Image (cartoon, rainbow, N blue to C red; front, side, top):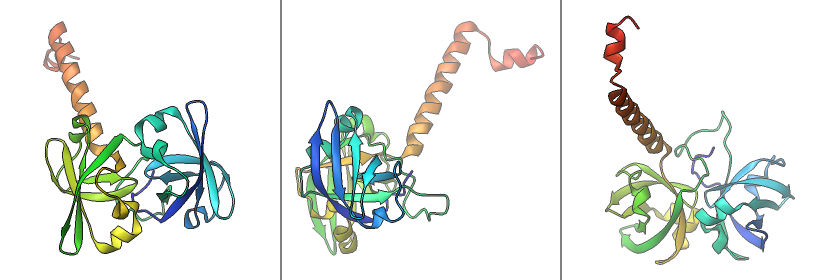
Length: 218
């Protein structure tokens, strides 16, 4: 689990393609403090397991599911990536609960200067827009950001100069692809509602309801 507060920007040292997999070697510093084999580091928002490390790099394997859903497949040597080490129970929760399981890729469709801030408008599949709410949180390349507005298939976030410097979104341009993880709470609510409706449908089909059972001593 992560907070979406990027600890540092690392860079890709190498990327090796395997059998429906990718082995990434990432240059880093801060996230490697007290790191151990098997630890999790969010890389552009993707939870990756450390399989090898040194004082200034770590190596991680990306499986097919990760490759198909995220922009890690688009990386090349020298590219910057957002990095965050997984939290512990004593870690301050400054952003929001982020799983590191990317839902989909998004495309930057516009960048607008508004005073000191830059407004980034991002287009994603309408399948995932149901989990995006105004003034809610969305994770973009691992960074927890506040949604300031939305349309049927886009949402916008605002970055102050400090944030522009600290995360890779600040240097991206229109047409670039980013990783999106939507809010976890919305997914659970949708699932609960789905099963409530399914249970209601089954009860009607069998004509056995909660009220019927209570009336008959159950």
